Length: 231
Length: 385
Image (cartoon, rainbow over all chains, first blue to last red; front, side):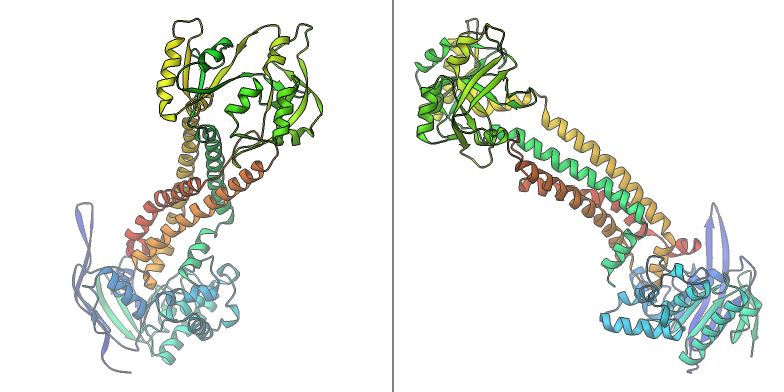
């Protein structure tokens, strides 16, 4: 793995205006994450975990400071440029899976590929590869309602990796799952990090889930207060 | 999968909602098609009327009679080529529900003035003129009641009565005519005026309207003014119009059909607009998080906008096309029913208007939700995930 940082936050501040007062989430936050890392971000509610994830995914913009990911300044990108960038660089995994209920597993996974110029055959091959990676190639034609929570989350992971992004952003990916299923999902994320070199940032409340990451960052009141290396 | 597949899947994800919304649109466009067809049918008499034929009626309205003596006086006026007259019989066969458009006419002058409109062999015309009890019937009317040449048929009147109290005139089918134009049905019955007039107990020596041709259509206005001027101080003042204007005034007796049709169709479409608009807005609101996910996957705001608008268009065109095609099919079936009293048609203009309305429905119901989806901030959408 190259030792260059994939993610660089420099003096990032983020504040929201509510009524007439301004609420500061981050003030002069700095962060550097290397390519191939698997980082869990923990912290109490309101500490800014999800806001940080949104900033890194280009979902939200900082009030000031710079965000560089894979060598590109995303804080200055236009909306359409950000859309293109997200399609190629980032995969999102949500707590509640957010699959399209009217589409089969394969079609859910295929969604990001509609933005590429791949042929139908190539798209089908990529979809089956992604489903195979998460162990669901035999469930391609099933709809989300025919699958368990864990299976739906694995389909969501397949959707996140199908366009081969470098960065996976996971927001409480096991928050809606039982312990055993959560373990399977986290093992899958570990495998993606270990075998496919995906850089993963995972927000979680669960210390057991965080142990699957290579390092844990504790965020409190908009500042990183502690960094632990798990193994 | 394509963007089109995604639009279709989104449209049909709630089958019952999709069915009910489509059905509402179907009803609106079905009504539109049928009512437009009737509107065209009611206008057809005016549009297909001869432009060199004038009709003289009582100035009060066309249900009031004119003295039969007017016919000869009009015939003798400058610019008049031929003149004939017609009296409404109010005829039916056996039962009042078997209504027939029937007129009592002067056979010879009638065949002269209407020679281009009524098609039948010369020997049948001659037989009709010769036999006082003879009648001409349209091929569609004859087909409806199974009449053939030479049949003796009792025709009743819901207006006229004979001295013995009978309202029935026995007539002989002497001619079966076709219409000169495909778009006009071969309906109706024409009997001798003298046969009716001699036997009826009231209204003797009066007729309904006088129809005339002029020596030159450019003289129409001049001739019409001269006729009305001549009778203006009599007990039966006249109003002379082109046949097209007369037919239109006949339709107008039923009310302003165009306005009624526009009002019904407008109300139906407005209701549908509200229903579909509400359904679309609700549907997009429910999918806020999904739209957010799509944007997170890299779908551009403009793509999301197009897809939501595409759903609205899909709904409008799906229901609209089924409704318009069904209306067209029903009109075609009605057109082929022998003796159907209206000249129904489904011209290209109705198709174009229907397509135009589908586009308007799609834009008006889709634009607002599509704009909301376009503007939706990812952070807002994710707050609901």
